[in-house]
Structures are given as structure tokens and as C-alpha cells.
Image (cartoon, rainbow, N blue to C red; front, side, top):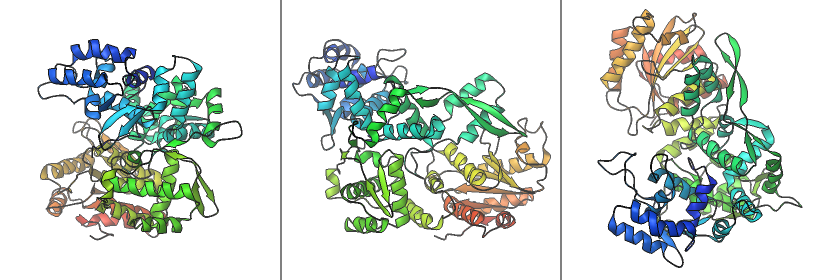
Length: 577
């Protein structure tokens, strides 16, 4: 079974390009003819592929393998700028410096067309073909009422569009970070959002306009990217307008105001369109297209999570159920789940744009759901829950004071590609959820996170590793260097003066390493750092950090006790393997 990620789209913006992608599948359309007679012969260097692509485009009923549409990535010996064209959709999309684009934008536009129902996807054959709705869109005259109606049906069938519109209807004026924080599955890798307070603080600290521009352009989570992409579509159809928003925040000793340009409001037309989300006497409620693939993205056991959530959706389509009844329904499907996990899934399904009605203690999905099909391969192979998901399920039942969105730390601790997100979420847990001062530093020649409370300070190094972190001597030396810089506090030693993050009242310091799991001789390195520096420290994994946070917020642990846990030169354990 090919691994596709339909349902979530980034970096595909223009409706003109979308229409051209869909029109590829209309026999003898302008774009279809252009590909066959000009673009494919000129742009595809592989003679065999060239002839195969033209043959596929010449069918009466066009069905094309996904790999032929998307093409390949950058071959060995090439760069992204000079990589040859290798896919049909690559040839459709004009680049900035060349006549075609790479496989990533091609994949994004294909995901967009499939996700909103313009293309049908045959999972068994890994092929795309034109849907009835897609045919109507491709053949509709540009700017016509027919085109507008087809786009309305397609966009409102896509749950995340409905989520963004509903949030704007409720809140009025929102930044991409405010919307991103409320879009996607709770506490799950693949749905990160940069805390807006961190952005405002960064803008306030920036010395030059160029620094602010770079921060706003380069700093966003995956959910924030989804928001930016979706809002570009909604602006194109006139439902949303982009209006900068002023945000107040604390910086230094005072309150400052910063502007976030990527902020959005509904237009009058958009407010009217929102009536189709809930339905009414004059507004037809459009069925929601929910693909199995969109029910989890980056998690290690995404097939299992997709199955669980698909079963919950199917169960709640039929009747209103309590969490205990959902638990029993899932048990009949071979899935053993805790009610806390089910409740998080219900909130998450709302977060992706489904309408869930709660009456007393029962829940029901009020949308008509289309497109939700289990892959054929699952009839003979049932995915199993990962150890990470089992751990998160256990934590859910113990985190009654801490927001479950921080369960993402468990995922991020094992994801070696998400260092920045891991640092940001660790800092947010400690500062926004608890009462520590400080935050993420995370730049060159700075510790990842520094926090303090009253006269105690903690220097933290976050390390995300897929197979556990052994604390190599090079990174132990780096921590020792930070400790010494903090003692000396000399601009000659380090001109960025990162230690100014600590309040003047802080007199006692500890160090810490935070990771998904610790392996090998990390204890020897902790002792080595302590022996050289005279400070004590500890290692703590994501799950135990969450338990510590819960104890602090619940009041069963004091802040003094929290810092004393880092006196051990060992791993802090509340949960044992």
C-alpha cells in the first residue's frame, strides 16, 4: 500500500494552478493538449517515460499512477534548481526560474485536488482519476456562477476549511498562530503551532525590520502552515480578508505592541458562507469529505490512530453515544481504549472541523460523512498501537491539571527532525503552564531552554533521538561550557550574554538534559559534568517531565522540591520502565 498523506495540504495556493491540475484529466482540454504536444515532449528527458505519459494522457477515461503525476525528487548529481522534470504535474506547474516545479509542489497540488474531491484516488492501484465534481470544475467558465458554486461545495466539504471559518466566525480577528493552536489532533506530532507569545517576544527583541520579517517568515509550526495555506484559498474566493493584527505582550519590564501581518477576518460573503457549515432552512449543509489518511499524519502508529478515529466517526454517525459506549463500540472492533483517550479524540475531531453535538453526556456527529474508507490491506492486517501511544494513554489518565496538548512532548522526544519544536514545547510547558520564568533560547552558542523560580535556576538541553539519547561527551562538554559561561558572565567569553535570561535573585543553578529516552553511559557523563563544574544535574525523559509538571500544578510538589530532584546526577524517574 502506497503511503499518501491526503487531507492536509501545505504550499499549494493558487486556484489557477489547481484548475490546470484538474484539467489534466479532461481528454483534449487545453492543458491536456499542451502537455501531450509540447510540454511532455520538451521537458521529460526520459524517452520511455515521455511516451508512457503521453499515452496515459490520450486515454478516453484518464487514470494515471500517482508516481507518474508527482514525479521523483532530486536525482543524485543534481540540485533542486536544475533537477530534470520527471512528472506530469511537475510540467503543469510553472516555476519561478524554470518552466516546471519539483515533486513537492506537484504532490501538494495533487493532495489538494484529492482532499476536496476534485480527483478520485484508487488506493489499491495508487491511481488518480477525475471525479464528477472535478469535471464540473474543469469545464466551468472562469469566474462564472457555476465555478463559484462548485468551489463552494468542494471547499466546504473539506473539514479544516470549516474549522478555520468557524473559528473566525466565533473569534472575529485571528492570527495564523491563534488559529493554528486550535487546528489538528491534540498533543500529536504533525500538528505543531508556535506559541504566539514567543513570536511577540521575538518581534520585540528584534533590532532591525529585516529581523522581524525573517522571524515572521521562518517561524511557524505545521498547523500554522496549514492555516496559512487554507486562508490563501479563502482569500481567493472572497470569504476571508488578510488584515494585520496588533498583539500586546510583555517584554523586559513593560508591555509592548507588535503587529502580525498574517492575520485574518471573515468578509460579509464569508459570514454568509458559514451558514452552510451548520446548515439551516435556506442553507444546504454540505457533506464533509473525511479521508482515512487525514486522521493522523506523523505519528509512528498512524495507521492504528487512523483506524481508531475512523471507527469513532462511523459510530457517532449512527447514533449518540457516551464515552463508555464508544469504548464498548471500539472493543467490538478489537480496540481497547481508555475514556480519556476517547475524549481527546472527540476534541480533536472538532479541531479538524467536524460538527460534534454534545447532549448531556452523549456525543454525536451531525455532519454527513463521505469518502471514509478503510484500505483493503487492513482486512488481513490490523495495525497495532505503538509503545509511545500506550505511554500517552497512561499519561492522559494522570494529567488532570496539565493541558493534554503537551503530550506532544512524548512524540517530539523521539523525533530527531523536530529539535526546535521540542525546545519550544518544553519551554511552553514550564513557563506558560507553570510559573517558571525564562524560556527557549535555542540559538547558536546558547542553551536550548533556561528557567528559574525565585533563587533557583535550571539550564536545559533538549535532545530528540529516535533510539534514545546516550549523552555523548561532545554534548556533555557543551553543557559544561554553558555552566562556566554562566559563572563568569563575561561578554568576552560569549558576546550574546544568554545568561541575562536569569533574574538577579537566582543564586543556585542546576543543569538538565531532556529527551524521549536515555541509554548507554549517560550517568557517567552527568557525573563528569558535575565533577568538572561543581554543579549537580539530572536527566529526565518527556513522560517524567510531564508527571513533574502535573505534581507542581496540582500542588503536591513544591518548587523547591522540583529543583532538589536535579541534585542526583542521575535520571529522574516517577514512571519506571
